[in-house]
Length: 284
Image 1 (cartoon, rainbow, N blue to C red):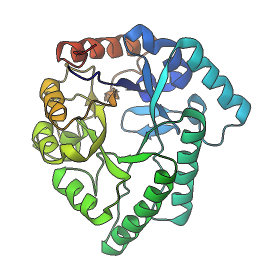
Image 2: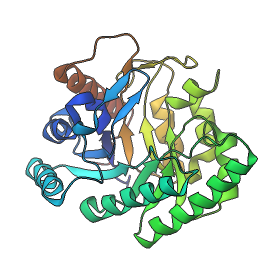
Image 3: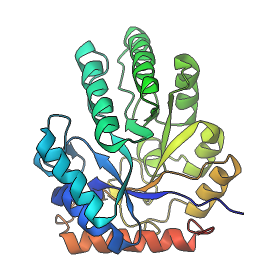
C-alpha cells in the first residue's frame, strides 16, 4: 500500500493577501495544509508586509483568533517558516529560537524551515555550524526538526548541503529541498540530479517550478516552467520513504503586475492538479 503524502502550500503563495486569505482559500484549491510564514518577505519579485502574517511578536488573542480561523476552515499546519534571522549573531539565534517555540506552542508542528545563513569566511562558517547545533538542541527538546532551505551559500546545491550536514552532524538539522532554487542559484544544475544525492537528508520539500534560468525570477504554477520533473522528484523521495511535507511554493514572475487573489488561487489550483497528474495523490 502506498503511504498518503502530505501536500501543503506555503502561505507566501498568497502574496500580500497573507496567511488569513491562505487559511480561507486553500481547501478550495484542493489541499488542506499550509506552511506558515512567520515573517514578511521582500526579495526578488515577492513583497509581503509583516502585517499579512502571524509573527512570534503577536499577542495571544491575535494568534488564537488565527488558530480559530484555521480550525473553522479545516486547515492544518504542516510546518512554519522561521527564517530571516542572522544566525551569525546570538541575537539572531535567539530570535530563531523564539520563532521555533512559538511554532510549537501554537501550531505543534514537527518541522520548521530556515536558511543556513551566508558566512563570509571560514570563521563565520564555523560560528554558524556551532549556532546550528544549538538551534538543533532547542528544536530537539520540542520534538521539531529544522529543515535548511536551498539558498545561496552553505545549502545552495547538493555538494554544499552534504558538506554542511557533515559539519553540523545534528539529528534535528536536516534539509528543505527547494526544486526551483537549484537552477536559480546554480547555473546549469538539474534539481533531480541534486536531489538524488541528498534525498535521505530531506525533511521538507518546497515544490517550485521555473524555466531553468540562473537568477531568473520565474516561478509560475507547477508544471508551467518546464525545468522541474515533479514526477521524478516524487519517485526519488518515495524510494527513501519520504512522504511529505511537500509544500507548493509559487513566487511569481519577475516584471508581472502583482497578481490578485483570484489569480494566485488559480495558480495554486493548477499546481495541485499538476501534482495529481504526477502521482502525488496516489494512495488516497
